[in-house]
Length: 192
Ligand code: AP5
Ligand code: MG
Image 1 (cartoon, helix red, strand yellow):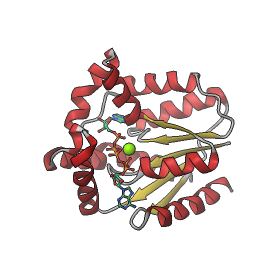
Image 2: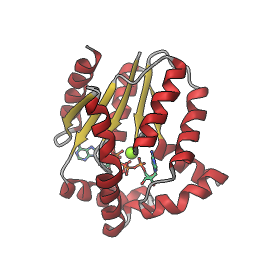
Image 3: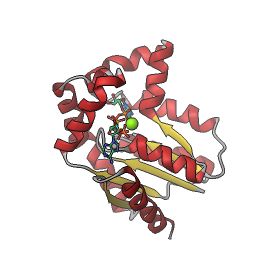
């Protein structure tokens, strides 16, 4: 069983690398961003509540996020494990995740944090914005908000895992395959 938090700023490659991990290790992918976008697309109440926050690049309130993950975990029984992508993003979310997994007796092995400089992130997001249809990829101002929110609200989550010795940092610049190899090495260290 491998439960990993794949962490990093907007555009760091969390989604891209998650896909590769899922294929190789048969893990379940829980991406709160993808789940919210699904709700948005289906026009659910939750989607309507989340939309304004997402469009502006701000965080959706913790309780909405935690309840959504709780629902997802209750229907999830993958013995191989789970990749959490884009969650937890605040300390209350990190604590809630520990409690939710305690109930299942399947703790998080650790966090893998992708580090990528801001200028590279901005280039990637603007490029994706040409085709993604994501309102939060469309202009520099929204991207700047996302990067700032990451610095102020989300970075403390890395410190939370680091303090518990459940943390590995990985250089997120390079080809997708090279970064993937770095991630696999980091996973081996977390499994020890
Ligand atoms: P979310 O969907 O999680 O977006 P994000 O964190 O801003 O990150 P992205 O999905 O944009 O980037 P990524 O790291 O997945 O990179 P990707 O692989 O796509 O969240 C969106 C919003 O939802 C939030 O702003 C918030 O409002 C809300 N939300 C979600 N979770 C929440 C939570 N827990 N709490 C509160 N609110 C929450 O790659 C990016 C681009 O780069 C792609 O085009 C890709 O092809 C390219 N790329 C990838 N790797 C490389 C590489 N090595 N070299 C060059 N290009 C690359
Ligand atoms: Mg993503």
